[in-house]
Image (cartoon, rainbow, N blue to C red; front, top):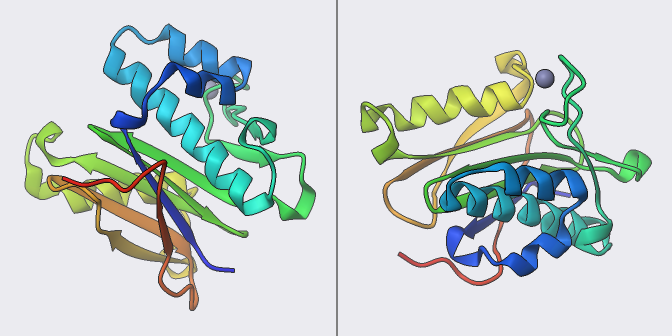
Length: 183
Ligand SMILES: [Zn+2]
């Protein structure tokens, strides 16, 4: 099974998505002051559940996402899929500007990062910035243990990078949710 990349956009933000989220995710959304931040948080959490649900053949709301921080035990760590034993894929989530992205691999390190170039001091730094973030999310693996690839975001003005286990991963399968994203 290959790598899966799922894109969504802030245009998908809708209060109905809250019904897919667990209590911790809803609390996180409600805690944010700015509506754009609430939308990004909601769409990112929902997209993760939709992608993993499709991968496992379960309903998005039934996916168990563990966000326990490895440092302090708080609920803000990198998401891990729980409750499905060895079937649980490795996942990574990122959002910036109007876009959210989820990457999923059957096992091993994974990291994805999308960055709106206009938010950077120097937009030319986009790919390098996204690479650093994606490597961090993948657990800062040794470079030889992973493959690093630029993704083509579905909107102009963004950089995105995907880190996956080294080896012949092939081209990621790309899905837009809930509908095609067009500039
Ligand atoms: Zn922490």
